[in-house]
Length: 344
Image (cartoon, rainbow, N blue to C red; front, side):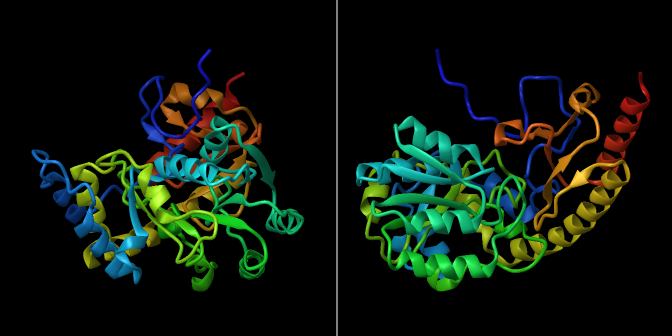
């Protein structure tokens, strides 16, 4: 029997989705500058297999050496590759946030690795202090599905711990570009010692373009960059992926992103207020998605063309994750909820 694939938000094999609250992708769509770049991508030739021009372009903006900027086919591919690379270097234990993105766990289990979950930063620090063997530690900042951020005090303590214990730190940065509240809490010095996974397609609303990059640590006692790179398939990025990443850090793209964050913050506040008026319990979030607990079952919303992300696979039965959507989509959601509650 084939194992069940991980659950994700977005399209499924059900009825057409009119209003999709289940995906964390930016609902404002991509800026014209990025769309035009993708449309102009050269599909008649293979990309440079080393992606040297792209890596140098990204490295210049990131302030990192091009040798540390490693293209990936999105974060999910990077998670699988990094976990495999760690296992080949002797890592047998993987720590994952709970609740957290399911691919961290499934990538480790597929390789027969031991998986340990942690429910708070304090719990993770306490457990790692007791360890002598090397381990791979996954962190998501800001976290999916909670939308929450670990405090600066945690990151400072983690930096101190890493200097004394054999831990390989991997930080998923997928939602940092969509942060609506506060600042990135990860100290720059610690970030330079982590494997950082970046996937701009979510912030750009282009999740169908599978492209991202990893920023490798300046120095990792467990894993070398060459090992990670050796596990990449040939041409890990399509021409469209290269075009999207080249356009990602352009001033026009970043200005559009800043404007979209402002709009998303307004939509998020309105959506949260409306749901709380209906009696929903909404968790605080620093990004344009959140965990919420409805007062009644919302399974029938799918019949109304509305999809939320059931949080049961995160270990949270009775909860849903939903992203901020445009006012007309919010109105459709509220009308459907009202209709469902009034129907015997």
